[in-house]
Length: 231
Image (cartoon, rainbow, N blue to C red; front, side, top):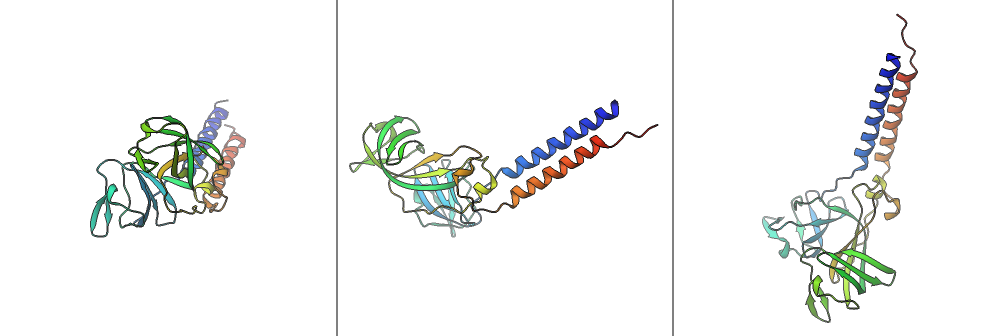
């Protein structure tokens, strides 16, 4: 009885190790790499094209400096096309962008300090407004708390994927990045959503995780089914 119990404990530990390994492989940590290019700047939000081609969305902490050649620059000094020559570190982990959409929409609702809902041609969309964002309405600069329903605004919406997204989602080909128009707003997709991106990336991490799980499961079965040694 004790032998069977010990085998069950070993099998449980192995199964836990397998699930932990799969979870670790599923978590994607994005980085700008040693060089990157500024794509969008709005409020405290920065979008860059990383060394590997991915579009990354950063929230920038106050006082953050960026390396541009032999000089450093603040966020306010960055422009689309600026070449950054050192890995971007803003105090926040970047989010991988799965889609970019330039729109002109009508304000449906406003929830300061960071929420706005727009009526677009493809429906109503709730969006996150980066801190410090300025909208332009009829040629006038407005902050989020100055927006009113039915005002028309232009915006560049970047859709980010969750940290728990599947590897094939996070590794898919980056979207096109049209020229910025208006404020940059952020739309988020739910975690583990394979529909957030076309299935175009490598599946090696997923296959590796699957193989590891099978090995762990096989080892667990071996310990469970191995007959006890008679004393």
